[in-house]
Image 1: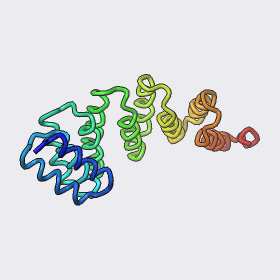
Image 2 (image 1 turned 45 degrees about the vertical axis):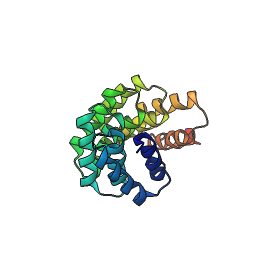
Image 3 (image 1 turned 90 degrees about the horizontal axis):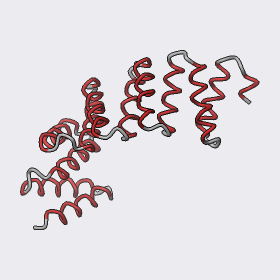
Image 4 (image 1 turned 60 degrees about the horizontal axis):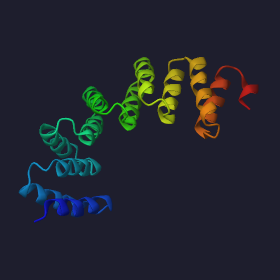
Length: 193
């Protein structure tokens, strides 16, 4: 048995959407190699995709015991916790992923989207401003910041964020839409056109 080749083959099945075949393959591989971290993380991710959150969490936790700084495990475990409505634990996991890689934009996006969905806009604004020091050119994080500022009734600051985005890339449709909506909210309908 060639573990690396077998894992690659199973992972390709997973990527191709052959989830039941991949599930069986991961489980079989882990019978012979119970500490194969990539197989543990991939199986946990597959269970997450299938909505089997308890199984997913169990395999993420096993992987993180073996490799506590495994970025994909930290991030995807946070997604699993979020789906279980364990929001504070999910936020802590996103923070661990960000600590491992402060440039990991996806972890920031998911963390701040969760905070925004919880109505924690002040915390979201402060965190996004800090995150943008690490990934300053992130369109998505800038748009999240503008949305959080708007939710916190800071339309003038939100407009500044969006106009900065448009200075960098004048073709961003989402930024144009957001700018127009902010201008309308500020009573500047004429400027919104």
